[in-house]
Length: 381
Image 1: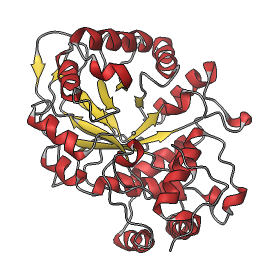
Image 2 (image 1 turned 60 degrees about the vertical axis):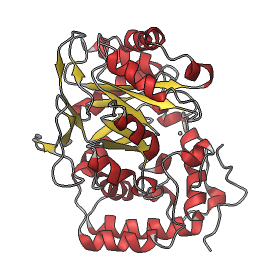
Image 3 (image 1 turned 30 degrees about the vertical axis):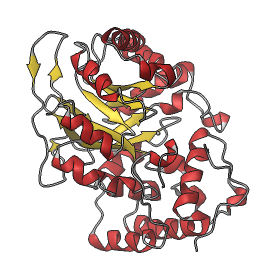
């Protein structure tokens, strides 16, 4: 039986959409951008930059996406390396863009995150050449009051904070499936003339199926997907392949836990000093515990050493090459790992590498649940 993290870790207790251009009535259908079964089409890219891929026709992104949850507060960590607030956060964006990471992901509930992105966009004269994703998150009473007027009010608030006329992509998060208005919410987002493309985050396969049946499918579903969390493989990947819905994984590096920094380190010596680390520690406990995790890090380190790269890059490459994955979110407190992000986007793992990694994965607990059901308290991990 795999060991637990122990008392030192507290378990933490989430038809294609047409693109609308310029807010007009003109529509351009999202054509299929899939390659061979389960794979995404890669766009041409300049040498030493980050490869790009199509979410759907008219929406191309960098395959590494800067996740901006870290700008919401509670992610400061070590003060010397913290660039998650104020001018430091705004200035850091340019390093990502210079490296070819042109896609940012935020949410209307991520504190000042939208405003920080807006300040950066304003400083460069607009969003040309960039792609900004945000979210429409519904909790509590909001789930009972879905109207076009309510949706427009909140979408307008996001546009004003981001300082853009139109939103490249909006992802619906719906907290309680017993409130059945999520299809209505998708329809209102579809009908909003300032939203170019509609997606979901943390939706399970059943809800995706209902949206497809209602002719309001998302172009992608942002889900937790990593070497520690393979729940998307429990039916979602096959469904998304069939209906040309892309996956945009987050949690790829488990809040930074999947790195050399934790290889050979006892759990009792680990500082779980950010929201991210606390969250993914609970996931790790479900998957196999700290001793199993050390075995995984050991194998990843062997692969990384053979390729003169890092554990984080190997873990990122593993996720990037899963079926239907259009890109990966990398949450960053600063721009110190931008060069690694570039390398990870191009790293190729051979069959021997994959087999060695699979040998350790198979020794952990097998996840049986669907995406985010465990976090909602509606199903197993």
